[in-house]
Image (cartoon, rainbow, N blue to C red; front, side, top):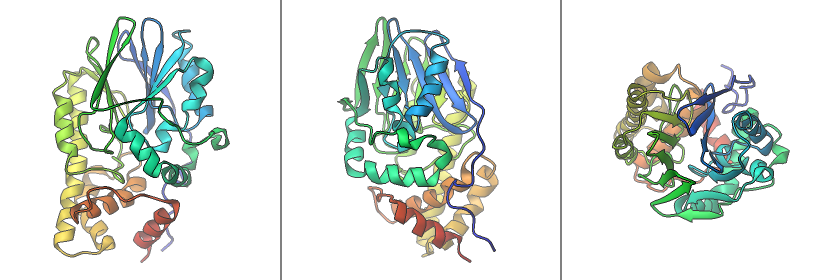
Length: 321
């Protein structure tokens, strides 16, 4: 049996992008399951939520923004530290960028594992890192917060909050209370697998319940289409909770049974494949997801650092007959 190509190295097909308006102030830049970018247009400036993978790719977002406003792009908010979300931040510098905002927990993760994550992600998914040579290095926040902060873009209130761990321990959301629009980062996905390689799976469902307490009428998920009404928002939250709880329950069962990692993968697939095999990046994510879920089920609370070498070792171990 031929071994599957590592992670998403075989995924070379360009995705169709969409730039969708959600409210007077909010837009979503989406691309058929590729990482999304959120845009908030205030009275005098613009905020970007998640900065794309490279500065060259960031220019595609800028081009869409310039169709609707010439206001300076003053803020970039990082919902978490993963390379595919942050390495494009320098692409906004020539458009008025003043502050790169992140939680203090996200800053700590960049210090601890940012370089390893950058090297790992570029090898996993080369299509997403177009013109990777344009990346000047790690993206460092210039403004950090703990718990929550409120920023006023003129008269527009933007609440920036950590409502709990999930996709990472630093997960951050942006909430527009006036517009009832929520930017969730990878805490919520739509029609796409959840990447849980650095997740806190036991805590994630409670964090989703905390998100439900916000009266969001529209939501920009980390991947997948923008959710355009309260019913779609509820469905996206339920889908994400089902994904992470099914995964973690399967891992707990596998650990109880004493299965090795490959046995755990086979066991977890029995409950995951029927529900999720058809969604974007499922096969890419599952080996990393299973590995982290088994670790957490064994009591490893703080996710182990992924390196390019560890990626390859895990992948080949799970693919061999």
